[in-house]
Length: 362
Image 1 (tube, rainbow, N blue to C red):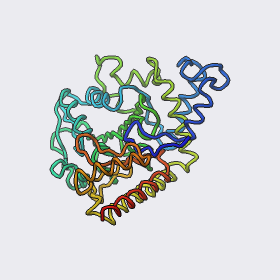
Image 2: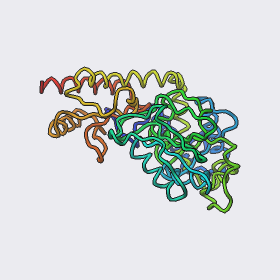
Image 3: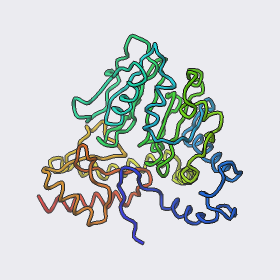
Image 4: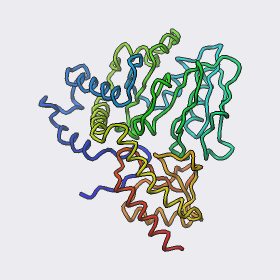
């Protein structure tokens, strides 16, 4: 079977090796006579899957021992509410850096819980860039935490240097670039990410949480919305998305075979460069949305000289076997999401298609 060139923004491509292993084990996991989806989440078999996923995450991301690793549900969108519910005290302010639609949504939910402040924003230039360090001006009153979105899927921008803070908790939504490069987890008090970009299928949300934050959580929160509930039960307070966690564990094992995060990051640079080189060579034809220093390695966004030409590009790309190149409905244009599991060959094919398409019109 010919695999398509999958550039979907999410749910996104999964490694073929992972899909093949899951297919092989689908009916009979580890000689249990059951599918993973049939295993009890209290069974020794699933406990092994969960522990393996936690250990591999800790190894790959070099997560310190004073951080908890949780697998939750509700996507990053539920975290938008849980974070201020757990960590925003009545006499404090939650700071948000706005770099796109998802950071706007996170702020919207936080406003329902307490006092907030926009610490920096690039909305005035249509989210074409990431704020510089000197543009992040912290307020004089007590700041509970600073929230950022590390990669912006819709606009195609990414933080390449994270804010340097003194004594303020940094919280990051890394849904679309988690596990794509090496990071210093200790710079963050909390990292969260929906799985459906680089970690696995949709339905699982990873939370990496500094243990000392748990002491700030107020009592009387709804049980399922209290991080302490999930820490105490090792993410097993209720039935977790067992198959999603199993798939996530297979993806982590695959990342290790790719040379870990160093190998993955190198490949991601190579893949993105193939497409950005076309845009840089012909900037009047392939017009990038993001400013060069803020470009995302994960989501490459651009338009063509006219709406008609953009539509023709997308139509011909679809006929050529490319999937998911349409830009987000809110801004249009084109978007190639080159997540970890998108192979180099797919990006080479897209760069070649961009070259041949341009020659037809110039």
